[in-house]
Length: 257
Image (cartoon, rainbow, N blue to C red):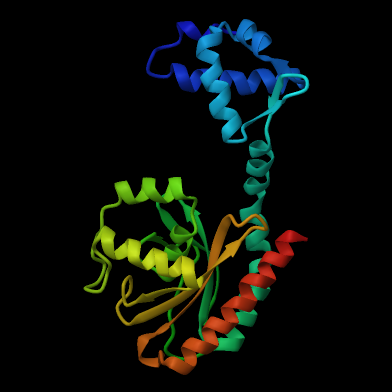
Protein backbone atom coordinates (compact mmCIF):
# COMPACT_ATOMS: atom_id res chain seq x y z
CA UNK A 1 0.00 0.00 0.00
CA UNK A 2 1.41 3.39 -0.95
CA UNK A 3 2.59 5.91 1.60
CA UNK A 4 0.26 8.90 1.27
CA UNK A 5 2.67 11.10 3.19
CA UNK A 6 4.55 11.52 -0.11
CA UNK A 7 1.46 12.68 -2.02
CA UNK A 8 1.26 16.36 -3.07
CA UNK A 9 -0.13 18.45 -0.23
CA UNK A 10 -2.98 19.79 -2.37
CA UNK A 11 -4.49 16.30 -2.79
CA UNK A 12 -3.20 14.50 0.30
CA UNK A 13 -6.54 14.40 2.12
CA UNK A 14 -8.43 13.11 -0.91
CA UNK A 15 -5.70 10.57 -1.60
CA UNK A 16 -5.89 9.29 1.96
CA UNK A 17 -9.65 8.85 1.77
CA UNK A 18 -9.50 6.95 -1.53
CA UNK A 19 -6.64 4.76 -0.35
CA UNK A 20 -8.54 3.98 2.85
CA UNK A 21 -11.57 2.87 0.83
CA UNK A 22 -9.39 0.71 -1.41
CA UNK A 23 -7.74 -0.86 1.64
CA UNK A 24 -10.98 -1.82 3.38
CA UNK A 25 -12.57 -2.95 0.13
CA UNK A 26 -9.60 -5.14 -0.75
CA UNK A 27 -9.18 -6.71 2.68
CA UNK A 28 -12.91 -7.36 2.99
CA UNK A 29 -12.86 -7.42 6.79
CA UNK A 30 -12.82 -5.09 9.77
CA UNK A 31 -9.51 -3.38 10.50
CA UNK A 32 -8.43 -1.65 13.68
CA UNK A 33 -7.16 1.90 13.99
CA UNK A 34 -3.61 0.57 14.37
CA UNK A 35 -3.86 -1.78 11.38
CA UNK A 36 -5.10 1.01 9.14
CA UNK A 37 -2.40 3.38 10.37
CA UNK A 38 0.33 0.82 9.68
CA UNK A 39 -1.04 -0.22 6.28
CA UNK A 40 -1.40 3.34 5.00
CA UNK A 41 1.62 4.84 6.72
CA UNK A 42 -0.55 7.54 8.31
CA UNK A 43 0.22 8.77 11.86
CA UNK A 44 -2.50 7.71 14.29
CA UNK A 45 -3.11 11.33 15.27
CA UNK A 46 -3.85 12.26 11.65
CA UNK A 47 -5.93 9.15 11.06
CA UNK A 48 -8.24 9.66 14.05
CA UNK A 49 -10.09 12.68 12.63
CA UNK A 50 -10.31 11.11 9.19
CA UNK A 51 -11.95 7.99 10.60
CA UNK A 52 -14.29 10.08 12.70
CA UNK A 53 -15.43 12.13 9.71
CA UNK A 54 -15.93 9.09 7.48
CA UNK A 55 -17.89 7.27 10.19
CA UNK A 56 -20.14 10.28 10.79
CA UNK A 57 -21.05 10.33 7.09
CA UNK A 58 -21.62 6.53 7.04
CA UNK A 59 -18.79 5.91 4.57
CA UNK A 60 -17.23 3.81 7.33
CA UNK A 61 -18.86 1.66 9.99
CA UNK A 62 -17.33 1.24 13.45
CA UNK A 63 -17.96 -1.84 15.60
CA UNK A 64 -17.48 -0.93 19.31
CA UNK A 65 -17.10 -4.57 20.37
CA UNK A 66 -14.24 -5.42 18.02
CA UNK A 67 -13.07 -1.80 17.67
CA UNK A 68 -12.81 -2.39 13.94
CA UNK A 69 -13.69 -0.32 10.90
CA UNK A 70 -15.34 -1.49 7.67
CA UNK A 71 -17.02 0.10 4.65
CA UNK A 72 -20.30 1.74 5.61
CA UNK A 73 -23.84 1.90 4.31
CA UNK A 74 -23.16 4.98 2.18
CA UNK A 75 -21.50 2.71 -0.39
CA UNK A 76 -24.61 0.53 -0.66
CA UNK A 77 -26.82 3.57 -0.98
CA UNK A 78 -24.60 5.06 -3.68
CA UNK A 79 -24.49 1.79 -5.63
CA UNK A 80 -28.27 1.64 -5.66
CA UNK A 81 -28.49 5.22 -6.92
CA UNK A 82 -26.26 4.41 -9.89
CA UNK A 83 -28.93 2.12 -11.34
CA UNK A 84 -31.93 4.21 -10.33
CA UNK A 85 -31.95 6.62 -13.31
CA UNK A 86 -32.23 3.66 -15.71
CA UNK A 87 -34.99 2.16 -13.57
CA UNK A 88 -36.87 5.45 -13.46
CA UNK A 89 -36.72 5.98 -17.20
CA UNK A 90 -37.74 2.37 -17.84
CA UNK A 91 -41.00 2.77 -15.95
CA UNK A 92 -41.67 6.40 -16.91
CA UNK A 93 -43.30 5.85 -20.28
CA UNK A 94 -46.63 4.29 -19.18
CA UNK A 95 -46.85 6.63 -16.19
CA UNK A 96 -46.36 9.73 -18.33
CA UNK A 97 -48.84 8.42 -20.90
CA UNK A 98 -51.45 8.06 -18.16
CA UNK A 99 -50.60 11.50 -16.77
CA UNK A 100 -51.02 13.12 -20.17
CA UNK A 101 -54.27 11.22 -20.72
CA UNK A 102 -55.61 12.54 -17.40
CA UNK A 103 -54.56 16.15 -17.97
CA UNK A 104 -54.55 16.40 -21.79
CA UNK A 105 -51.20 18.19 -21.43
CA UNK A 106 -47.55 17.32 -22.13
CA UNK A 107 -45.63 15.59 -19.35
CA UNK A 108 -42.01 14.69 -18.65
CA UNK A 109 -39.60 13.03 -16.26
CA UNK A 110 -36.55 15.06 -15.25
CA UNK A 111 -33.25 13.94 -13.76
CA UNK A 112 -30.49 15.94 -12.12
CA UNK A 113 -27.52 16.56 -14.41
CA UNK A 114 -24.89 18.72 -12.74
CA UNK A 115 -26.45 22.13 -12.13
CA UNK A 116 -29.23 21.39 -14.60
CA UNK A 117 -32.33 19.23 -14.91
CA UNK A 118 -32.53 17.03 -18.01
CA UNK A 119 -35.66 15.69 -19.72
CA UNK A 120 -35.21 11.91 -19.62
CA UNK A 121 -38.67 10.88 -20.87
CA UNK A 122 -41.63 12.79 -22.26
CA UNK A 123 -45.11 12.40 -23.73
CA UNK A 124 -46.60 15.09 -25.97
CA UNK A 125 -50.08 16.37 -25.21
CA UNK A 126 -52.92 15.72 -27.69
CA UNK A 127 -54.06 19.31 -28.20
CA UNK A 128 -53.09 21.55 -31.13
CA UNK A 129 -51.40 24.10 -28.89
CA UNK A 130 -48.96 22.22 -26.63
CA UNK A 131 -45.63 22.53 -24.85
CA UNK A 132 -42.85 20.57 -26.55
CA UNK A 133 -40.33 19.00 -24.13
CA UNK A 134 -37.67 17.12 -26.07
CA UNK A 135 -35.49 14.30 -24.78
CA UNK A 136 -32.16 15.70 -23.61
CA UNK A 137 -33.46 19.24 -23.09
CA UNK A 138 -31.80 20.83 -20.06
CA UNK A 139 -32.74 23.80 -17.90
CA UNK A 140 -31.17 25.55 -14.89
CA UNK A 141 -32.37 24.36 -11.50
CA UNK A 142 -33.92 27.78 -10.79
CA UNK A 143 -36.00 27.99 -13.98
CA UNK A 144 -38.51 25.19 -14.63
CA UNK A 145 -40.95 23.48 -12.30
CA UNK A 146 -39.29 20.08 -12.79
CA UNK A 147 -35.89 21.56 -12.01
CA UNK A 148 -36.93 23.65 -9.02
CA UNK A 149 -38.61 20.74 -7.28
CA UNK A 150 -35.41 18.68 -7.60
CA UNK A 151 -33.40 21.57 -6.14
CA UNK A 152 -35.86 21.97 -3.28
CA UNK A 153 -35.48 18.35 -2.20
CA UNK A 154 -31.70 18.05 -2.57
CA UNK A 155 -29.70 17.41 0.62
CA UNK A 156 -29.00 20.67 2.46
CA UNK A 157 -25.26 20.60 1.71
CA UNK A 158 -25.82 20.15 -2.03
CA UNK A 159 -28.51 22.81 -2.14
CA UNK A 160 -26.37 25.34 -0.26
CA UNK A 161 -23.39 24.62 -2.47
CA UNK A 162 -25.53 25.34 -5.52
CA UNK A 163 -26.99 28.54 -4.05
CA UNK A 164 -23.50 29.84 -3.32
CA UNK A 165 -22.45 29.35 -6.95
CA UNK A 166 -25.55 30.04 -9.00
CA UNK A 167 -25.60 32.87 -11.51
CA UNK A 168 -29.06 33.79 -12.78
CA UNK A 169 -29.57 34.31 -16.50
CA UNK A 170 -32.90 35.82 -17.60
CA UNK A 171 -34.38 33.42 -20.15
CA UNK A 172 -37.59 35.47 -20.03
CA UNK A 173 -38.71 38.62 -18.19
CA UNK A 174 -40.28 36.32 -15.57
CA UNK A 175 -37.13 34.29 -14.83
CA UNK A 176 -36.27 34.33 -11.14
CA UNK A 177 -33.27 36.58 -10.47
CA UNK A 178 -32.32 36.57 -6.80
CA UNK A 179 -31.23 34.13 -4.12
CA UNK A 180 -33.79 35.56 -1.73
CA UNK A 181 -36.68 34.91 -4.11
CA UNK A 182 -35.39 31.45 -4.95
CA UNK A 183 -35.00 30.49 -1.29
CA UNK A 184 -38.59 31.60 -0.65
CA UNK A 185 -39.84 29.40 -3.49
CA UNK A 186 -37.77 26.44 -2.32
CA UNK A 187 -39.26 26.67 1.19
CA UNK A 188 -42.77 26.72 -0.27
CA UNK A 189 -41.99 23.76 -2.53
CA UNK A 190 -40.66 21.73 0.41
CA UNK A 191 -43.84 22.49 2.38
CA UNK A 192 -46.31 21.67 -0.41
CA UNK A 193 -44.36 19.14 -2.50
CA UNK A 194 -45.43 21.09 -5.59
CA UNK A 195 -43.39 23.44 -7.79
CA UNK A 196 -44.54 25.99 -10.36
CA UNK A 197 -42.94 27.87 -13.21
CA UNK A 198 -44.92 30.72 -14.73
CA UNK A 199 -43.38 31.72 -18.08
CA UNK A 200 -39.96 31.57 -16.40
CA UNK A 201 -38.10 29.41 -18.94
CA UNK A 202 -40.31 29.53 -22.03
CA UNK A 203 -42.63 32.49 -22.69
CA UNK A 204 -46.26 31.45 -22.52
CA UNK A 205 -45.64 28.11 -20.77
CA UNK A 206 -46.69 27.21 -17.23
CA UNK A 207 -45.22 24.17 -15.48
CA UNK A 208 -46.18 22.14 -12.43
CA UNK A 209 -44.03 19.39 -10.89
CA UNK A 210 -43.64 17.00 -7.98
CA UNK A 211 -40.52 15.13 -6.82
CA UNK A 212 -39.95 11.40 -7.15
CA UNK A 213 -38.55 10.33 -3.78
CA UNK A 214 -36.84 7.15 -2.63
CA UNK A 215 -38.16 5.26 0.43
CA UNK A 216 -35.58 7.16 2.52
CA UNK A 217 -36.67 10.55 1.19
CA UNK A 218 -33.87 11.16 -1.32
CA UNK A 219 -34.92 12.97 -4.47
CA UNK A 220 -34.47 10.75 -7.52
CA UNK A 221 -35.99 13.06 -10.12
CA UNK A 222 -39.24 14.83 -10.87
CA UNK A 223 -42.40 14.57 -12.94
CA UNK A 224 -43.83 17.72 -14.50
CA UNK A 225 -46.71 18.83 -16.67
CA UNK A 226 -46.22 21.80 -19.02
CA UNK A 227 -49.03 23.66 -20.72
CA UNK A 228 -49.77 26.91 -22.52
CA UNK A 229 -50.39 29.60 -19.92
CA UNK A 230 -53.59 30.68 -21.70
CA UNK A 231 -55.20 27.38 -20.60
CA UNK A 232 -54.02 27.51 -17.00
CA UNK A 233 -56.81 28.08 -14.46
CA UNK A 234 -57.80 26.90 -10.98
CA UNK A 235 -59.67 23.85 -12.28
CA UNK A 236 -56.76 22.65 -14.41
CA UNK A 237 -54.33 23.42 -11.59
CA UNK A 238 -56.27 21.11 -9.26
CA UNK A 239 -56.51 18.38 -11.93
CA UNK A 240 -52.79 18.47 -12.66
CA UNK A 241 -51.81 18.59 -8.98
CA UNK A 242 -53.89 15.47 -8.23
CA UNK A 243 -52.66 13.62 -11.32
CA UNK A 244 -49.04 14.36 -10.39
CA UNK A 245 -49.55 12.79 -6.96
CA UNK A 246 -50.66 9.54 -8.57
CA UNK A 247 -47.82 9.65 -11.12
CA UNK A 248 -44.98 10.06 -8.60
CA UNK A 249 -46.53 7.48 -6.24
CA UNK A 250 -46.79 4.96 -9.08
CA UNK A 251 -43.15 5.41 -10.05
CA UNK A 252 -41.97 5.32 -6.44
CA UNK A 253 -43.87 2.05 -5.88
CA UNK A 254 -42.36 0.48 -9.00
CA UNK A 255 -38.84 1.46 -7.95
CA UNK A 256 -39.50 0.14 -4.45
CA UNK A 257 -40.47 -3.18 -6.03
